[in-house]
Image 1 (cartoon, helix red, strand yellow):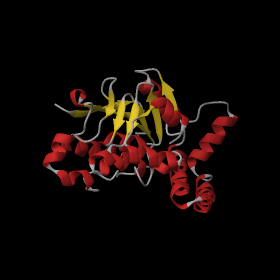
Image 2 (cartoon, rainbow, N blue to C red):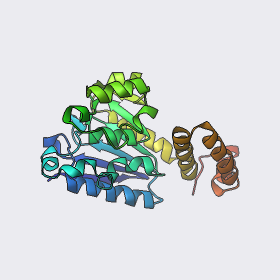
Image 3 (cartoon, rainbow, N blue to C red):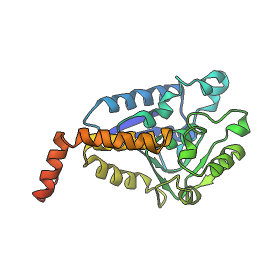
Amino acid sequence: MPDILARRDGGILVLTFDNEPRRNAFTHAMTERLGRLLAEAEADPAVRCVVLTGAGTRAFSSGHDLNELLDDRDHAADEALNAPFTAPARMATPTIAAVNGVAHAGGLILALSCDIRICAENADFAAPGARLGLLPIGGQVSRLPALMPIGFAFEMLATGRRVGAAEALRVGFVNHLTAPGGALEKAMELARAIAANSAVVVAGIKKGLDLYAREGADAARSFEWAEGARLQSGPDAEEGLRAFLEKRSPNFQ
């Protein structure tokens, strides 16, 4: 049965889309389960980072199960029903996409909604909406241009062509490339580095960068000074500075 597998590795939650026969396509039930799992992770202070990946080595996710979409066409463009695909961008908890294979349609939406993208060399990205008569939604128009040059984003969306891993790295959409099968290992390495740091500071960084992307430098500048003043008197700043002076690893709350 198609499912999303969840496992914990310390403060890291790993979610694996498990529908290999259909290139990890999302059924309605899987979409709902993803939403629940991400909401639970956001509410759990012990979860310091979420890593999303696909089962096997062929696909991160090919998006919605098209057989279900044919029976329920409105599902494809319903913002509330598709909210789990864009949830990573709204979370304070950092998220990493370990793109182990094709990331098309909804799979692309999930990848672009994450904060970091690690990509296996055999992976590729595609937004087939224009070829299917469907407007690319879920951040493909509103968020993608913040992650790559706008001209490249237009070409990708308007042609629907597949963008390979190396090309995605070249335009800045992907953070790191790995050998096939290595995306999850690299993602876990980064997740552990993030999880070792102050969660409130990491959340502040994510919020400030999002403000910059949506509202510009002035909004981000106002936020960083106000939030910086608030956090510098907090317990994590006290612990971090003491740990540095005492030459030990910090133990953040």
